[in-house]
Length: 579
Image (tube, rainbow, N blue to C red; front, side, top):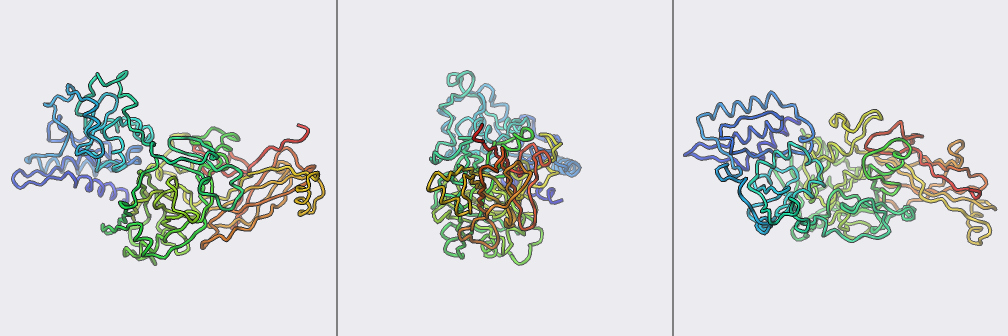
């Protein structure tokens, strides 16, 4: 029922923008609302208007597009009721031009298309050679005004980023706003030339050349191995996981909107947050759900997604204010979960969305922050400037960057990143699962990885001094790495095997450098040294957390086609001198 309430509420919100009430003509625009509900249920609606005038679509989220919604009976009743009760009225909703305007024969030059960009009164986009006036669609678009990045240009490059748009029903919605075609004189091979398309990534920041890049647009790059050996990761080498471009946010214009359960809203500027609330510091590790996905692919089967090695994880000291304190200032009773509220939803300026359970958001020991500093400096653009959410102990996908809206809701975020991307399925389930059947990833399992294997020789004065610290007098091998567990569960042991897992020894857990926070939100570095003569061809590591959770020995047992939460024993080949 919570989804039903949301669907109807959103339909009313979208319809409210186009609702027309005229005492003289009794025009209510309710066929637009009825068609919106029918669009959600994939059921047809016969409007009383002529077929040449099409109703506006509802706000369809990626979740709605990807799966049919079980509202059939109710939607049919609403549609029939709207049609019956207003059968004698003139039903009206704003729509693209009627067929009398002959849009198929109307041609536009590129210069005119470009004049209808994000700063214009009317917003136009082009797909192929077809031009669309999407002005009335923008308020109900699932990504909000992010679609305006494409205004005045070709929408195709943006929809290649938002792959959820590449569906027949989405194209059908767009066709409702068709107004004409691009003049053939401005086309190259039937399409708008690429130099006429705005590059959404043109304002992305420069990055450190040492990052290991998996994709440029959007940028996804992992921390190099040597930087993983430091407890705190430098801002420049902190791994980057961007789903879209980096939004350009002007601090003077920035506002954080809090959408409360009673329908009221409250706004804060960054300065208001900094001046009004107590500043807190939390040392927390961020880990992408796809960290070590490459290992699952190599040791089990192919997985979908970026093939991260061990570097989609980093640690920083975050500075900000507690989300709990901000919600209390908004009138929320943070000592008890408000009725009807199950989740805190976060939305970023570039349209990314995610959510966490409300009990995590309100937990006085949960350390959920609205952070504006990273390692003592203002957030870098890649990491959420000017404000981001930090949810310690939870998969990094929930720590939304560039956050500009927080909503308290009875359901999870409806974004594709909450409802689809960050979930796990059984080893037997293929790439077209029942997405709604799986729980969204929140806390992460125990994890460990080897980041360095170094040979040390007693022939070197420096190495000889090092091995003697460990009571050795012969050539040795030093193995280093990290271990981490979600939910604030500290790592209590790291086991290392230098013979492929036949026998085990315990690594030294290095002291955390003044970690801050109510729980163990940060990783542990570890080190292990062993005589070289004892080392076989494969070195293995596994970790144990304070709840005595440990890692699986293989990848097939926890294989999932998305490659999320890869946590099998990390095995690294060791090259023998004789090889």
